[in-house]
Amino acid sequence: MAVDTAAQPTPAHELPSSVKPTTTTKSNLDTITNNGFSVPRGPVTSTLQFFGGTTDGEEPYNFVEEPPAGKPQNNLTVAEHAVNISDLRGHEADFNIETNAFGALSSIPSAMSYTDWDDDARIHHKYYPEVEQLLLNAVPGAHRVLLFDHTIRRTSPGAKRAPVNRTHIDQTAKSAAQRVRFHITDEAEAEQLLAGRYRIINVWRPLNGPVVAHPLAVADSTTVPDADLIPTHHIYPDRTGETAAVRHSPAHRWWYWSGMQNDERLLLQCFDSQGTGARVPHTAFVDPRTPEGAPGRESIEVRALVFG
Image (tube, rainbow, N blue to C red; front, side, top):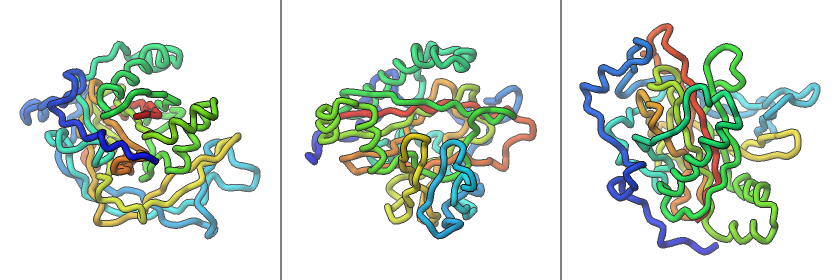
């Protein structure tokens, strides 16, 4: 593959005004609440769940939907480790998707209202174009964006999808190439795109910010070697993709963005075919400082193929 040597990290001060990080003073941060519940701030130690092996000695797998009769949902075991998680707030400009595989963007306008999130048609019609434009503006070299799905997560009882409390990466090199061929149905066009630079990037935001409970933690890609990532079969009814589980290492450096607001976005790069190849392990976690009775986190992640 030809390497795109022209694509370089874009400093925060060179981003369009709509995607520049903003700075919030400590005094303002300390007074922010959600329905009267204070937002936890600063570094924290929490227990994260890592790959602990498989129950049967076979290759790791997970069924997305109901497994076949007599088959467990997955064969993964969990290894829990206490991890120090630093606060990204105030350090947003120190990280970017090119190097660290995540980026923090502030003051992002949106036409979405709270009730819009219960309507998939409105999400596709109103929010998808916002995400597409955001990625074209914020990702160096991007010239085409294909949004292929989204997930809304809520901690409320009966929610269809809850936050995932397990360290993982959504895609591997194998499944990223599969995604291109799956969504670009013209074979010649797909192969042409695969010959250039392509990435999978999730755009993550809260729906009921500021986030008080179950924040999202991300690991700096530069601290996570490939040896700590375990390919895992992700089995759909009609096909099999691949995610990556994460083996714990004290060398990993973890971050979270305290009290994320509705106009803030985290870019999570799951795969990059060129450049540094940065990819971001991530997980929801339980912050032990969360006030009892605090509002549960609600969020949406939109997944995108980004070309160029």
